[in-house]
Image 1 (tube, rainbow, N blue to C red):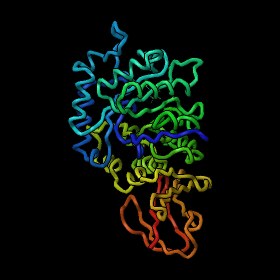
Image 2 (cartoon, rainbow, N blue to C red):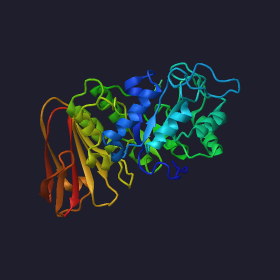
Image 3 (cartoon, protein in one colour):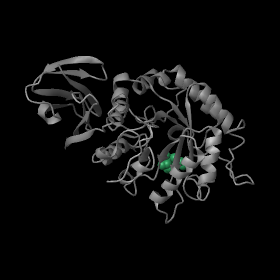
Length: 368
Ligand code: GLA
């Protein structure tokens, strides 16, 4: 701590969008990206706040051109990246791209070591708004210095671009990355499995003090709608990422998702937690066996969100005293179910929650 934080206004709330990696890996092309951008609009995701369409690893040709510039894979992106970015912008969306700080990407494609200024300039010329910089093939290098070089390269390229730092939480980036980039991964890659979501969540419990406007912890992109996650698990994953003020980068196929998946991704009162203007990341109050209780304080000061996670396979009852979440004694509060979007009731002492197996209950608490 004790170092400066970015405050350039590029990510005042956690970035929201879609990234190709979790669902498509390197099997990406311009049609997929454009269809996804259109689906983002048709499904209501753009209106819900999703803005960035990001292509991850696998977009580049195996070699740079003779000037040393990046080239897009001509089979996957025959129209070129600039044209793609223009079309994304014409839809009222923003465009993001991926590179790697080392000698090769994680898929052994050309990466940016030694080309930082050239690549930042090229991205700026293409109209890129967001760059994820990965950390494969960086033997012996210090992430802090190398990512700082990227921040300088962005500055020299004279285009505002969100910098997404992706060194998987190895060097405690929460302690330094807020001065350099807008978000930093805090863990290894997510999988579309309940155990992966819980493992990542547990790594976030102590990180809340490091996040805020323009600098966010990134527990990785969403798996909502992927793999065999149940509806309750998808909801729990999404609710907890919102409690964490995490970047909400959908990672599923937006063109074919079910209405149930879409309803989770655009749930207005859950997205509103994530996007709360105060930017105060939620924290774990306690863990008691299979039950986690987390709280997030909202911008107004008087409002709180309680999220109770039941990791186990049995329904459980949980009691939370209002004083445990910082509400003054004898204050009357209203309790609201933020998934159901309906009032639960009023109380001045405690809240009783019945939570079913593998699910999260999310309640808004406000004075009145
Ligand atoms: C790393 C990153 C992932 C993804 C892949 C691409 O594993 O952590 O998010 O970008 O590389 O190869």
